[in-house]
Amino acid sequence: MNDDNFMRKTQIAKCVVNIGVGQGGEKLRKARQVLEMLTDQEPVDTIAQTTNAEFGIREGQPIGCKVTLRGENAYKFLKKAFWVKGDRILEQNFDEQGNFSFGISDYTDFEEMEYDPNIGVFGMNISVELSRKGRRIKNRRKKKKKVPESHRLSKEEGLEFVEKAFSVEVIE
Figure 1 (tube, rainbow, N blue to C red):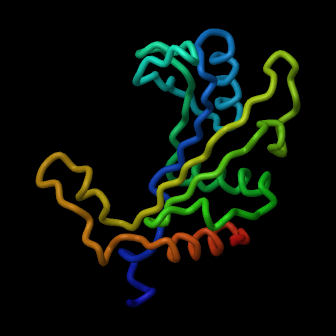
Figure 2 (figure 1 turned 90 degrees about the vertical axis):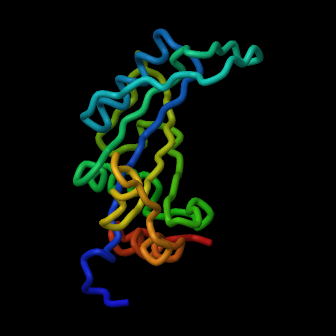
Figure 3 (figure 1 turned 30 degrees about the vertical axis):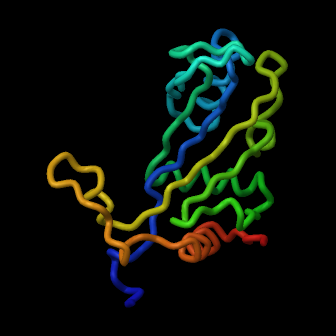
């Protein structure tokens, strides 16, 4: 394949930053505040899909919050997140389509963040979907189609993209 073909270039489709607290109320409000400080976007609540008596969760109850970043905002946030992880990521964090996820145990690990005793400690999960141009055919309203196998990303292409775009070391 020709590397100059702009339709074959890998890009970030979206980056989702999620904090799950398991309950609503004050703890969820603080988690929303952390996400807003980190991403400069307003988070949305995540809702429980099922009832789980062991954890005291009811269906329809807010149990966390998330922010979806796209474009330049996603690149900027991932640069900061990889800095927190020491510019390293495990190969096992990648799936077969080149997407990857990793966690950060404390928001105060970010460079500009300081510990606030009123907020406490919150970790987060970061999930990134990689794609190429032309992925719209699977999401559009009319004439939806599958992305052809030849146009999908592989795990190796995802690894290569992350190494080049963010100067990150992939550890086996």
